[in-house]
Image (cartoon, rainbow, N blue to C red; front, side):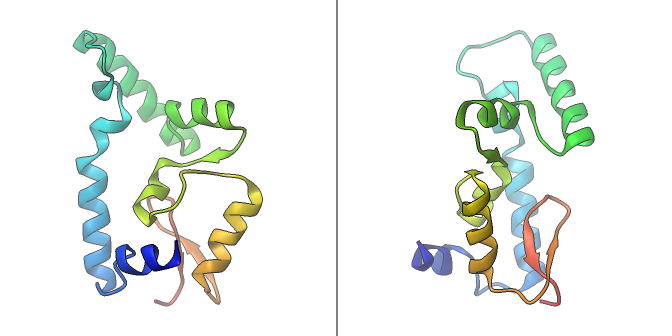
Length: 121
């Protein structure tokens, strides 16, 4: 897993390029986390309401409706955005702590999209 993260963790890119790549990936994948990605076609009006509901949920709690559903099913804390760090999207407290420790930071911070990062890098 660590080799995978080193290769795909984009360590060869500078911070600005990483942020740009993450932003592009996030914007490109927005439809995958909304009702537009459902296999069963639904009317655009319902899709719009579901997307608006997700926007409200995310602005209030930082989580989408599908993350809440996944948390109920798995009994773990879920954030789809972790996939950008090539990590499991759903983790228990021990797994999340191991994830942070593996980053080997002196001081941690969280960026705008909720991913942890080392401060000062």
